[in-house]
Image (cartoon, rainbow, N blue to C red; front, side):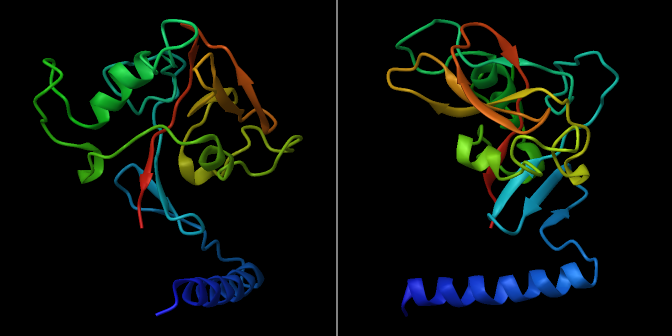
Length: 189
């Protein structure tokens, strides 16, 4: 029937369930599936869960929290071509060394991507200033309290929007060949 009416009814019921869950001290927003993914029931997004945290990057493991990637290698006017797009995402999609052959996708899905700035902001515990460092729910696994790149840029691209999980700051910067942290997302529901 009427999609808007259905969505309004769903949001109303969800709000009532959230109130009940909060009173019972049950967190219903996130679900860790035990496959290195977390689903956010408020947004319908499925997020990559990070691991590691020994302070040393392990680029063979795209889920290592210590890995950093570039957004672009050329400043101004190019599509994103940094290691976030040429190394990180292809590893999640199961691309082999030839960059073409798929060998299996992360958690059974081949549609992982960098989040938009709006999506990335949804997993902040609070906007600036956030009293918790890192400013993210523990269900997401280890998180470096630093800058995480989004897929959102200006036109033509001269930089990208980011979220800093050290306090909840959202900003924009020209990131020519500068490495930052990333977390993948997909439409999960």
